[in-house]
Amino acid sequence: MTTTDIKTMDICEIKSYLPHRYPMLLVDRVLSYEEGKSITAIKNVTVNEEFFNGHFPHKPVMPGVLMIEAMAQTAALLSFKTMGIKPDENSVVYFVGIDNARFKRPVGPGDQLKMDIEILRNARGIWKYKAVGSVDGQVAVEAELMCTIRNVADASQAPGK
Image 1: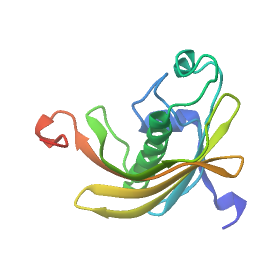
Image 2: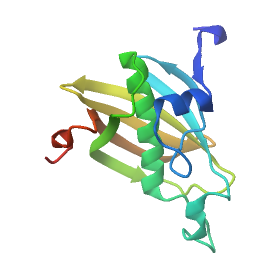
Image 3: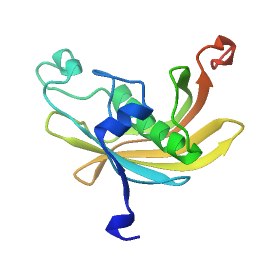
Image 4: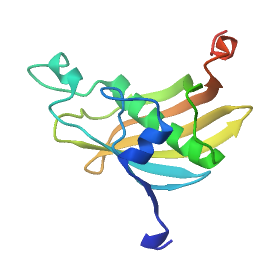
């Protein structure tokens, strides 16, 4: 693959695929993706993030759940690109499982969280991904994520129903 073959996404395109907005939009740029396989994206972590006001004022650390959420948003982008569709206002991506989550190093202001997501499988509407977030080449977080895409108008489709 040459550099001209690399598929990327800027923030405007990301916003056309994800319903999240500040402060919950946690993907700033997609560096590359290959439909049906993998995606690499970044979250630029700044001191202005709302969560740093309380987590923690004396030593700002990005909450682990938000690192997982950033990877899930990246995985959703890959799923929509793989399916060749853009979600509408009735589409929502739900977590159905998070396995083997491990937090290896803190992420703080000034860090760039690089997220590498790989599709492990897609069966009966359940997507499973291997997700790794790193900072400066060091793994910060890793997990296996499982998600499903549903229509919000049909509440009976929500997980656990």
